[in-house]
Image (cartoon, rainbow, N blue to C red; front, side, top):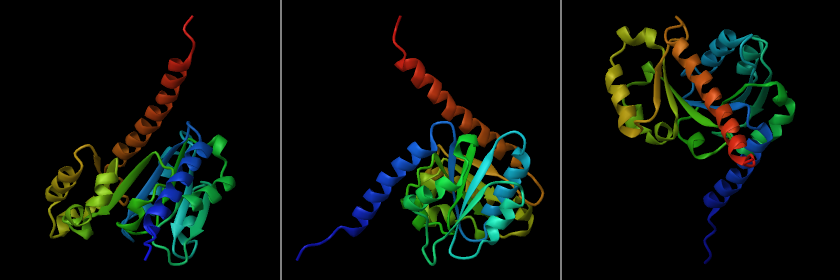
Length: 231
C-alpha cells in the first residue's frame, strides 16, 4: 500500500504560492498575518490601527471569516480598502486565497497590508500567507495558560498583542504568568499589552508597526547598495 503525504504536499504547494504572494506584494508593503481565537479583538485592533494611522500610512485589509461580511464592513467604515474571504467552514486562510484577493487591492499605493485570519489559534499557524510577520493576539479573558497549551502560534509570532487589558483587575488570571509563558516559548517576541476600548498601549503597537515597516524598507536600500557595482 502506498501512503500519500497529503499534508506535506498541501503545505509545499501553499509555501510555493506564498512566495508568489510576497513577490506580488513587493518589497515596500509590510504584510502582517493577524491570528487569534474568535472574539479576542482582531477586528477592533485593526479598526484602532486604521483610525490612528489615517493620513500617515496607507492601510488595506484582507478579512478572513467562515461567513458574513460583518468584520469587513466595520473596517471599510474607516475608509480602508478591504477584501472579504469567506472560507465556508475552512478553519484558516491559505496563500492561494490571498493571491486571488490581491488584484482587488491598490498595492502600489499601500504601506501596510493586514490579513485578519480566521479565528483559530491552531490551524492558521502552519500556513504561510506571504506575510512578513505573524502577529498573535490573545485577550485576557482567555486565561494565562494559552501560550503553554497552544505553543505553535506563540513560537511563530514576531509580536504578541495582549488585548482587553482594561479587564485585568476583574479576571482570575495572572498577566505576569501569561507574559512569562510567552517568553518561555519565544523570548524574541515583542509583547504588547493593549486595550482597544480605552486605548491603553496602542501607541506601542503603532510604533511596532512603524518600526517593522522601516526595517523592511531599510533592507531594500541595503540590498540595492550591496548590488551596486563598485566604482
